[in-house]
Structure formats: structure tokens, C-alpha cells
Image (cartoon, rainbow, N blue to C red):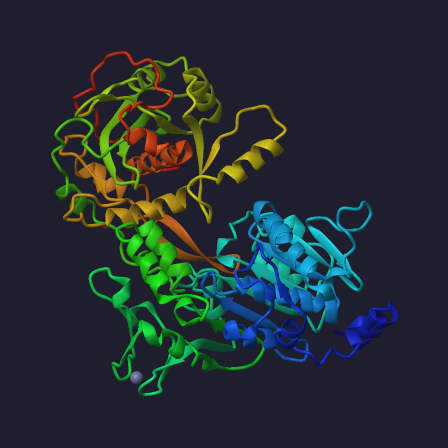
Amino acid sequence: MSYQKQSQLFRRGVAKLFTPPPDLTVAEWSSEYRYLSNESSALAGRYDLSRTPHCELPMTLLSPKNPCKRVLLPWSSQIAKTTVAENFIGYIMHQDPAPVLVVQPNVEPMGKAFSTDRLAPMIRDTPALTDLVKDSDKRNSGNTIGRKTFPGGFIAIAGANSPAGLASRPIRYLVCDELNRWESTKEGNSLLLARKRLARFPNSKELTVSSRTYDGIGIDAEVFGAIDDDGERGDGADQIYYWSLACLKCGEYQYPEFKHLKFTDRDVETITYECESCGNLHGLDQEDEIKRTGKYILKHDEGVEIVALFANTLGTLICEWRESVQAFLSAQGDPDKLQVVVNTDFNETWKDLEGDGIQGNELYEKRETYAQDVPEGAQVLTFGADIQADRIECEVVGWSEDEESWSIDYQIFDGDTSSTKNHVWDDFKEYLTTEFKGKDRNYTLSAGVIDAGYLPSVVHSFVKSLNRRYVWAGIGRAGKRPIVESKELRQLRLRKSRSKKKKSEIIGTDEAKTVLYSRLKLKQNESGITPGYCHFPIDPKYDPEHFEQLTAERVVRKLIQGQTTLKWVLNHAGQRNEPLDCRVYSHAALRLMSPKWGRLSGAVKQTPEAPIAKTITRRGSPLRKKRPSGFVNSW
Ligand SMILES: [Zn+2]
């Protein structure tokens, strides 16, 4: 900033910039003034730093007198990272008032939840803060769920998914929560947009916290540098610390990782923690003692402005090894759940994404003979349909409660799809009433998703003509988003939408493919029940070409708008991948329907909203034919 500009700012009365910063650190303030609330903490009452000593250094770095500008906390869930953010905000309100921007993954429900479940109780229960914020119930108080004002500053709460909320007045303090859950937006990199607002304050600070997901993504890119298309890394943090424990025998400090925990026969009472240096085993009776040795070990030191600190449940006093191992054991066989444990408990990145994907021929070899159309174990049938100009492709999949799946049937209906009057839609409609033979009863299709990305109005009118509660038009969207929206988000979107026109369901295709591909790698348990396992029948429709197309894609890292982004791409340009799309929509249908499994497994095995089925038998003959070559893979 030029001298002239600086003096201009000064004359405008931005005197706050130049008042000396308080001596008190955020850590000291928290011990002195902060009270934790019942609704957000198991440790309600006066804040006690001795229970969470791993929070002290980050809070010292966040203090105005510390030269650090950006604190990055890639932390497990449940180890008080939100408390650190709250303490930082409380400190600003009380000691160093200035404008604060808090960015949550979305305004609703997460921004709202942060405001009402965390911020409001902190202000209510921390006497030093209570009087600073006028009663938010009163009109004209300047306080809403998205904004709290206090003398000398305000807290604005924005959603990373609506960049409009990120680009307005300058702020001095930025708090970014759950960075790895920020969804991609068309408008640009939300983190960079938010950071731009700090530029006017030379004494600005940023706190970014998140659980980890994949190497090079989100908070990992901030700590270790973003990865570009050639695999090269950009700049990361200046300093990197690890919350480490000292071996009670040899005294060596190490960052605790899941590999250090040993146990036998799935018995959590046998857990020991092994020192990687001398091999000493620490039993559960020594857990508290070894955790009390915890301290930050500096592993990378190139400056002081951007500081990252790692900590996880395995090294913190407020968590138990038993719980972490239990979570790991319960997630066995389900890559979906296991990833959550690895990311949010152990604070490690999920490696399963690496490699060349899956070989179609291996899946072909794994095909099985089904005793009947619908094997035992499958309780609900869903379908997923992909619409092309000259045909409809559809797969029927059977599911168990833990999402073990059985491919049941794959059909291709030829014909011009551009109008519902065309015969191809009649053929498809008739097919959707097929009964499939099970061991004790026949099954009809319970739910389905039809791709509406290519011919939205045709698909919507077809779906309407079916008049079935559990059949949806779906639009696949890439980027960071769940397979289907949460109930809350879905209702919110529908409420907000003014148009009476029926909306398509948004299907998170990247997430669905990630889940599917990790499940395709599973090996079947000896017990015969393998959550998530995908079964395929020995059936001419499931030919080598089917599996070639099912495994047609892989994940690559791409640098987009300065952010490393995971992107699904075709292995070979122009390759067909309809079986993959059908499979994704079939899975989305199951998630959207969210069956009441308890009822299904009871004596009355009724499929909800089953249409009156015409008794037609399943088509036996393979309809797959050779694909037109050179067909542009554009939808
Ligand atoms: Zn040792």
C-alpha cells in the first residue's frame, strides 16, 4: 500500500488499524473468560485448556501480536476444532473488535447451525460477550442469524456455495470451516474470493479448519501445496507441526497414526500402541499417561506467516483409542464408511483413489450364477436409465440394507427418444412393470432415476406419465457434492424454487462413481455377506463389453482456478460408459427412496408404491448390439 493511500485511510478514520494490539493471547483469553455451552460441548462450563492442550498453540498463533497470518488446522472431528474457532471469534469481539467473516460450506443448513448452535450459545453463556451483542430477537438490533454486530465490528456468516455472500465489504478476520466440504461453484474459487476481502487490512488473520479427504485436495493443498496437472506441487505452509506423543520407554516423539495401534480378534480390549522406534507396546492402562506427553513437533520450517498444525483423535485426551478402533471395525468392508473413519478419526487422507482404476475383465471373471432372477439378500430393486438420442439403456439392481448389490438385468431399447409419443418410450414403460422372480416371491421395481440431462422436458413428461412416487428425473452434476441431496437441502431448494415446474433431482456423480469404484475392488467375505459388494450374473448381457464400459473412467487431479480438483475422465476419448451412468442413477434411486428396511425384512415383503404389475416375464434375450463406432460421447 502506498504512503498516500495509507494516510488517506488514516484520515478516513480507520483508526482501529493503528491502535496497539492487546497483549492477551487467544489462549489466555479463553482460559480467563470463555464458558462452553451445554448444547455444543461435553465439557460444558468454564473452558479448561488442560483437557485440550493441543488447542493452545493454534490459539497463540491466532493472537494479534503473533506474526502468523494464516492458521491451518487439518484436524479430526471431535477434537475441538470448532471450539478454537469460537474462542478466536469471542476474543475478537471482546479484545480486538473488527469485521469477521465466517464461511461455512453452505448458508443453510451449516451456516445457520453454526450461528444458532455454536455462536449464539457462546454469546449467551460467556458473560464477557453477552452484553456486547444486542438481543437478536428485537427488531433493528442489527442481528440476524447471518450477522451479529458488536461494538467495533460484526460477524458475517456466508456459504462457500454462494460466492455472492463472499464478495462485499473488507474484513480483517476470516474463519473458514470444513474446507473439504466446500462444493465446487461456477463462480470461482470461494477460498480465494474470501481471502480477497482481507487485503485492505495489513493486520488480517485467517483460520481455516477441516477434516482431510484426499491428498492435494482442500486443506491438504493449503498445507502441502496444490498439485497441478503434471503432478507438481505449488507452495504450501511455512511451518508444519504435528501433535505428537513420547514413547514412555525410549522417549521418542511420534505423530500417532492408526498403524501404531495393534489389536487381536476385533477385540478393543487388546489394543496396544506400538512405538515405531523401540517397539515398546503401551496398553490401554497407559493411554492417558502417553497422551499427557503430547506436544507439537515442528517438521517443516520456512517462515512464520502460514502455519499448519496436525492433530487427530489418537493423540488427544478427549478421545479414546477404543472408540477409534471400534469405528474402524464397524466400517470394515464398507469403503464408504471406512473413508469417513480414516478421514475424520485418524485424520489421514484416503488413498483408495490412486492407481489405474479397475480392470473390466477382472469383474467379468467374478460373475456368478444366480439361483433365480433376484438372489437372496437383495430386498429392493431400483433402476437407473440413461437417455441417448437413439436409445434408452437401463439397469436393474437389487440392494440389501448395507448396500451389497446384485446386478439383475440390463436392457437397451432402440428408437428415437425425442418425443414421448415414440414407441421407445412405450417399450421402456412396459419394461418398468416387469416382475422379477425371487426365491419366495416376485419383485417389482421399487424406485428409479432417469437421466434428464439430455432431454429434460421429454423425461419430465415421461416421469409424470408414470405417476409413481419413487421415480425421479435426475441430472448428474460433477464436483464435490453428495450422491443425493440431504432431505434438508432438498426441501430448501424446492421451497426456494418459485417455478411450479417439476425439478430434477441433483445427482452427485463424482461421489457415486467414487463409491462404486471402491466397492468394485472389494473381495467377498467368507461369511457370504459383504456390505457394498457388487455381484454380477453370468448372463450374456453382462459381457466383456459391459464391464469395459462400466470401468471406462478414472480420477485425475486437475488444477482449476488455482485449486486442485478431482475430475473423472474417460480412459479413452470417445469410449462409451452408459453402464456406469445407469449404475450411478440406480444407486441414487436407492438413496432417494431411502427404504424402510425394517419393514422390508419383516414377514410382509411389500415393495412400496408398487405399480399394478402386468404379469410379463423378464426378457431373456440379450439386446445388446454393437455400438455405432465414432459416436461422439457428448452427454
Ligand atoms: Zn520407544
